[in-house]
Image 1 (cartoon, rainbow, N blue to C red):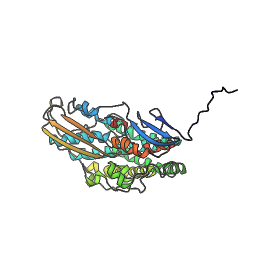
Image 2 (cartoon, rainbow, N blue to C red; image 1 turned 30 degrees about the vertical axis):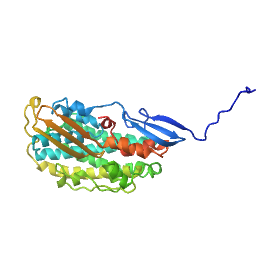
Image 3 (tube, rainbow, N blue to C red; image 1 turned 180 degrees about the vertical axis):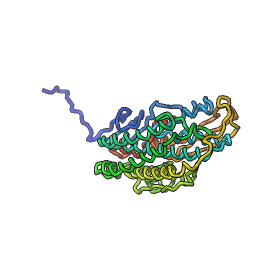
Length: 380
């Protein structure tokens, strides 16, 4: 028997509630989370939480000597650290008037393109894992590990290389390295059809990624989208061609664009970039042996190195998009001001929060991985 004062609770057909997506969810990149408010399974509000991993880089750099920051900047984007080293070093060189030897420039480009491949392979694997294609994740991480073996051979480290320094690079390539790099590129090209069958042409991937997280060309330009995310909107913008640096003007490559602007288009743009990076590295392997000379410019005592008063803005086309350092020197032994312009702080906050509105809960991981952000850079 029900009590006399019993009144049934009337629930609305679809009520609102909040949910934390991450940071321990496999669909979240690193120490990062999204607080979403849903109505049913449709997102009506999303707020990014950058977490507390590798934070405060800009102010830490202002307290360290110029040379000490070489060891700090790779941590801003762990999957793709080389652009951070190169961009910081180039900004310091612009202030100090340092000339980078030609051979060092070629080595820098080689490392940048190797790092681009590593980052994209990592993204392919993570994206596949969010929808249960774990085999592709294992393949992607394994191929990336082979490239990390080569990084370790050159730099002594697998992740935080600290190899590109103001004025050049720390050492020359070991004997036979270019041949081993060529062999690895052969293996990657041999494996690409397998990646195609399992991932890029998979009905699961196409059905899950098509038509979600669409960015129009107008939105991309208005929001400050860069890199593969911008080129997936069929906008051929690439700093390596449009604002060239190092020896990129001497290399042949195509700016890969894809139509659609959705999650699938962004992954296909990165697929095309891997192919172009292989093409660039083939040219470097062919030409670098004939390019001799020094690998770095002489520097003063790095513990008592005062750069002239000045400022510089250097930018690089990383795997995530436009990466830039704005550095101000007051003539002292350390930077007076540092600002990191990273693509992830835009893609993983402003863009992601907008794209999730109206999406379903199961699409969060796909949309986020398609934007390919580095969480430490968000909380820099």
